[in-house]
Length: 202
Image 1: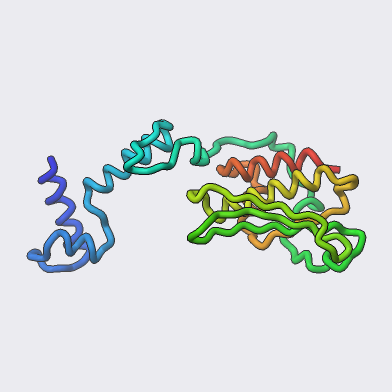
Image 2: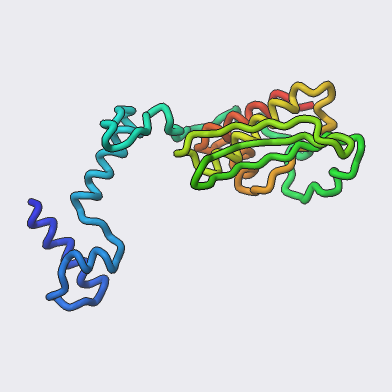
């Protein structure tokens, strides 16, 4: 079976690359960026084990645990009749609100470097930094997850303000807003944000 799969794959790689029939298989795989079949199958098996079956892998393979991975959500996060109001979410530039003294501005950020993955938000009131929050996430988290986490925490903070209608949350990533406003988003963190926002509607 292994030899048969090898020969079938080699034929396709030769046609894709246009290389000579004498070109070594290793060279074809390197040029086209296609891993060997046994490595690809091993990866798929491990991914299925830890992500879908929630079975931890041996420590010598990875230290990532099933609970560290965000599961893909399905279906609607809320009833279709429930949605964010136009005054709750906007894709327009919010710079005009920053200079207003009657508005509490909350700025969110998510970042990922080779050293850490972090989420944070800060609160600006009357040109003064009134509050700051930050958290270090798992190194396996993405910057998108960090941005969603910061947005979710900012919404929770705004919901506890005496008058949450005077607060504006500013984000620098359009995709996080689009995912959060989509009631069928597959991101669990985005669904949490959407639910939190619905709870503080006027």
